[in-house]
Length: 280
Length: 272
Image 1 (cartoon, helix red, strand yellow):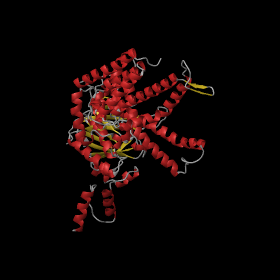
Image 2 (cartoon, rainbow over the protein chains, first blue to last red; image 1 turned 90 degrees about the horizontal axis):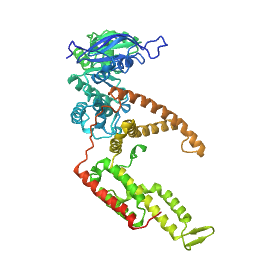
Image 3 (cartoon, one colour; image 1 turned 135 degrees about the vertical axis):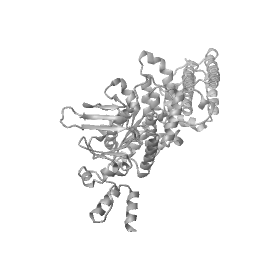
Image 4 (tube, each protein chain N blue to C red; image 1 turned 180 degrees about the horizontal axis):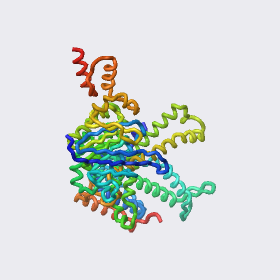
């Protein structure tokens, strides 16, 4: 369960790609992510969510405001590799994240960079590959794996750094439903192992599994709360060009049609239960 | 499918030659090439071929693989052999006299020795790639060139580039196939037309391929940064190359064999 200790803090972060343009990609974001939390970030294309994510491990530095990772300012170059080791990042396309031609060599890439002694690299990568569920594939060539397997190799490659926090930047966007389910299972396992998860996603069903949901629009955080709180505001979400999970959509339509349904119905299971009660 | 092509020509196995330290194999191969040039006499070449045959036998690589590796160079071998046949002049009467061309007995000898030497050279270097995977070979090159890093030669960067190139070959082949299909679906004629038309038809395939490759490079660079990559300094390796006692025995055997072959030049006259 999340405790009160902050792991990632952003204070009034501003960032723009082109300093000559007045438009900010991230326009005054303040947020606080606590250790052990699972936070989903939603938003339409171009709302600045990926840009924000890249601030969490010092790939991008804020133009104004500060980003603190476990209290370390990302602008402090002395802490650069500490920050990157603490906050792992997984991107959309697994093909463009895998460096080596053998799975276990790729997973070993990050610990090798950190200068971990060879014997310890071995224990770390075995642990990471088991956690990501690709230990059986350790001798395979990455191009022979499926999309879901490749993305889990990419996750294992980051987990091998032993990060405290994992940022997933639309990591399931390119996968088929089966691959997505594999990756979500891995994410839940990582959470159980105590790793904080920040997941940027387009899939409302994935966001519904989070502890907290943030909605971004035009570089700002416009909604925040538990999935139940956020997804019951169907109209408001639609105004930000976002959908709600199908279960919440159904509940909304039923309420509009005059059928009484309680609030906070966002998963298919909860929806089925409520409908069962009604039908009895 | 294009995807099924093998990278390099690695022929996996568990023989002594497969297990052997890749640095030793690399150095031995270079030494073997040198010896082929040092001892270009019939006895030396015969011994080299015998050594090679023994090594292929130990590595359990089928004979047809040797033929496969020699196939692409056959035209070059024939061309150089024929040239030598006609242009090497010797004392005495020519064997054959035809128009302005004379073939001497020395020319025939020279041509045969040269052809055999080139074939032995290719078969020998192929043995290295058959028994060593490209990734291991890259490690060996990095390890052997390490002393040059002191002279600011980018050894680690070179090895990293080779690794990434090997890693992306199948990915880019797959991508090329996709783009070709997409362009065919839009009516591109890739298989018909004159030679120049076909070359021109490749442009709409190469341009998207290059753009996508650059985009991939950009993303890969970011993913590598995220995994704390900062060049070769302070980097450790998962797989350490170890020189075992078995490797030492291989070293001795190979060294003795090569020295014996090199010494044949003292007893048997060879090519100039």
